[in-house]
Length: 108
Image (tube, rainbow, N blue to C red; front, side, top):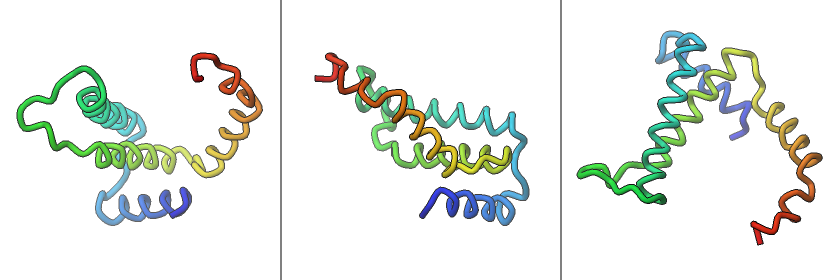
């Protein structure tokens, strides 16, 4: 599924099941909340923190999907074509960082 198809699918879902989009500030807050939930899993699974009892089976993929869902909502609300934005961003990174990482001794 392309990013444009994803944006359309989520727009349809919102209009069918969600009644309407939450306002942009609410969605920005929800995005921050979802990133925090993902961060908690990552810190416990890959970092030095341990899971609390009953937390062991949390799904990082589900939390990543929550982050993507809210990010797509924000893109839809603000008129951002995520595919176009990603293409521009990758072009920028390619120009700016063409040799930066190759030349980074820390990455060898």
